[in-house]
Amino acid sequence: MTATDRDRRERLTALGKVLRTSVMVPTDTYITHDIPLLLTRLSQVPASGTKREK
Image (cartoon, rainbow, N blue to C red; front, side):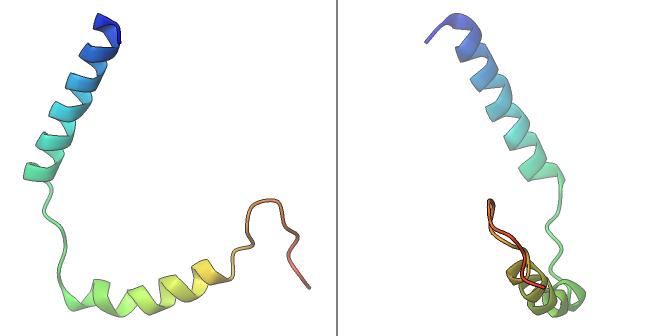
């Protein structure tokens, strides 16, 4: 691992720590109610390299 790689990893780690401490994760019911819809929509997305059936 070079010094440049080490510096990048340290900066990325520091950025991750800042984001985790500064951005609050929403925990309201609006998000909770959207999860089933999100999962349903995601299940309709074809896997990479496959064709969608009509």
